[in-house]
Image (cartoon, rainbow over all chains, first blue to last red):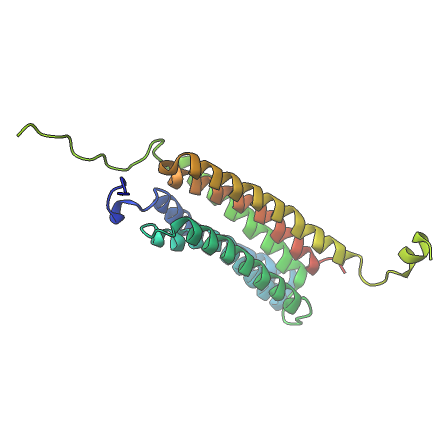
Length: 159
Length: 77
């Protein structure tokens, strides 16, 4: 059976630019959030608050960004025959791994004396919410084709 | 041994049950999001890119609750 789809270069899903933009914008917002939470953490809880704010924001930004990054990585296999399996394997495998690492981090940092856990929790919540806001802004301002961007084969000629 | 005695025997931190509950919700949520995406891509493979973006925002919102739920470990004793 011949494959009616175009060559492998055209099979990359149209979601790539949106996800890349979300990661870039997320990085910029994360940089701003780092400063804000660090200052607030330092003001309210001193050095431990500063450390907690930095760790909390970093955890939120990294763990929320991994989903988009895993989709981008999975899309590199778009031309493979095993794309659907590989895609969900990478995205959901990454998700599972992320949560295991997150739970281990939470357990390890719980009793750490060098950071303020309350500030860490609040920074994490702030980071998660900021990340969601960025995602929604990117989605609502993205221009995604409603139909496929697959190129049609050239029209037959008479000669 | 009746049920009341068994319940009275349970010891440890009750908040641990909360972390378990925090894992169940997102698991179901992501399962539905991904399952429906597979369904959509199976019906219209050419919309895979668009559906991926919608799947991503769905997963983002679902996992946000999981992160906050599990991170309550920091503030609840």
